[in-house]
Length: 314
Image (cartoon, one colour):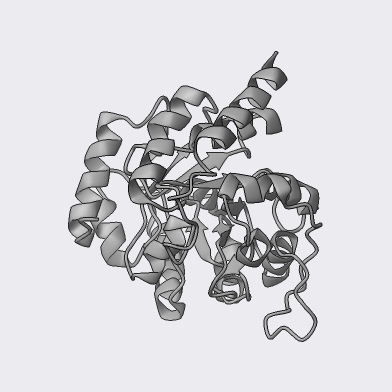
C-alpha cells in the first residue's frame, strides 16, 4: 500500500510542479539554501527531527528554518520513510512563488555511521534519493573525514583541479536529479566549498576528546563543509558534566578553530544560550532539539531571537 502511495505522490509532484515552465534551477546560485546563507556570511539555523511523517515534513518545510537534520543515527533505518519525508518537504507553493527550485529548508541526513564504519553504501542510498547533505557522527581523525567526503563525491573529470579526495559514489542520479529539478545534477552534486558550485554539505560531528584534539585537521580536510559539536557525547566521552569548565573549554577550542578557518560550526542551543553561542562563533546552530509536527513555541521563539541577534531579516 505504501509503495503505491509513494508512486502516486511522485506522479503528482512530477505533474504539478517541477516541470513548470516558469520555474528555474538557475535563478539562484545554489539549490542548497544553507550553503547560500553561509556564502552571504550569515549563520544558518536548524533543528533535529526523527519524526518522518508527512505532517511533520510539511510543517518543517514552512517553519522558517534554514535546514533540518534528519536523524537516522538514533532512529530506525527506513529509506522508504525517509523518501516520503523528503517528498513532503517539497513545498510546491513556495517554489512557484519564488520562481526557482531552491527549497526553503535544506534536508540534511545524519547517518548511523562515520568515516571508519563503511559509510559508502549508506551515503549513496541517501544522496540518490535527493538529500542535500550528510552529517557524520563521532568523527575523530582527518582520515575519517576524508573517507566521508569521498563517499559523497562522484569521481571528477580527468584533469580536474579538484579531483581529490577522489570520489567513490556510484553514478545513478535519476531520482535525485528529479527531486532537485536540476538537469545539471551531476555538476551540482559535489561537496562545497571544495567545489564552489557544489550543493552538497558534508558535516563532521566532533563528539570526543580525540575529535577535539584533531579538530583542525578534520575541518581543513578538503570537501568538509561544516563542523557540528555534540556536547552531550563529548561530555560523556570526557567523563565530565556538560557544564564543567573542561568540556566548555573543549567546545570553545573547536569554535575558535572554525572561526580561524572560516568553517561553519554548529551546536545545539536553547533560548538561554543562543546569543552567547552566536557570539562565540557558531554559525550553524540548532534552535531546538526535536521537530515533531512542525516546531514548538519555544523553538519558534529561539529562532526569532537568533535571527534578530544575527541581523537576519530575509
